[in-house]
Length: 282
Image (cartoon, helix red, strand yellow):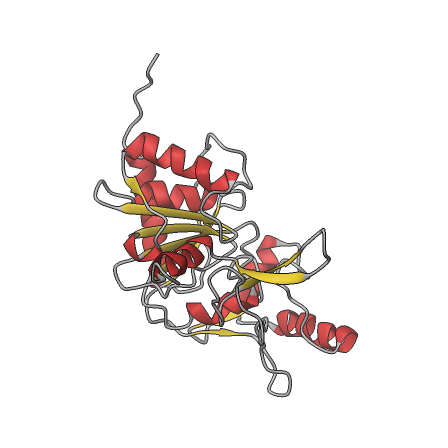
């Protein structure tokens, strides 16, 4: 039996409520806006916050790209695309430049985003102060007072213990010199892509019921000290074994047979586009 869904799964009232929260988030960059997170046909923690944003904003003429840790064909990405296309009929694409809406888990694409695009990031833990303050009431007060000494202390303790800031992902950022924000668990390598991004960046946490945003051309700076500046992951001297790309985020792989280490583009569609652009006799 065929089940008829409303366009983009949600009823129109639900979409309007999510859009209102999204508009408020855009108006106050970096501020976490509470919203009435809906029940979804996927488990919380599988991207329900990002998916709710996508379903509330997508239109019939949009083209959707979904990636999971750089891959377009992971289980998570495939099933999100299936749900969106089944309830909207929109086209899905792998090429970042062709997409109008990009939903992502743990990565920002290598190809720079443009003005007409929206990047939606899935977020498990939207509160950057939660690591040292369990009370939601207290974290709200700390944000209101712009009291972020705890975030600085966390980074200082990392330096004292390891000799450097050890955040592998989700390194906190300051948005428009006002709010400290969790950028979602993207690698440090991707943090600078948020700074004055041409695209609108939306972040949704379904389980925590929060939406926040980085509007286009907004200042986003990773927290760091003058004598211990922010450093992204370095892949100096390494290149993708398939397409030869450098200056991108690379996965380190080990050949089980030989034990040899090699690198590969984490962004699979970027790697494929470079391979397809090569001359036929290359």
